Image 1: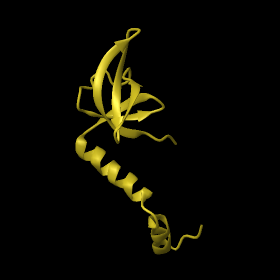
Image 2 (image 1 turned 180 degrees about the vertical axis):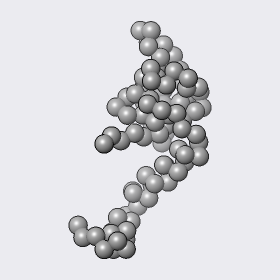
Image 3 (image 1 turned 30 degrees about the vertical axis):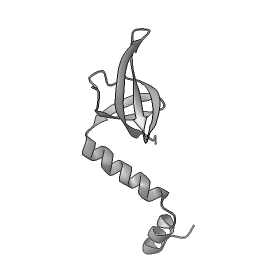
Image 4 (image 1 turned 45 degrees about the vertical axis):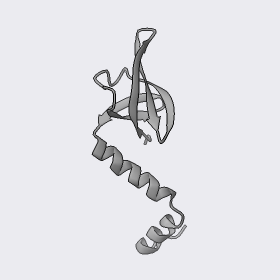
Length: 89
């Protein structure tokens, strides 16, 4: 299983004949390789895994994923869900 995080593409450029870009993750910019998503355009959302943009997603899907991430970060949410599902940690 891998974890891909969505981010917004803010810059596109070439480095050593490789398509590269800057992607924003909650205010943090990271350089990513766009070799797997050469069709990506500025302002679009990409899913990034280990420095590679592996797919394009629309803004609505990105926002949905962001809401799940925020939910995970909320204190007590894990415990509340576990209680509803009768899971013990």
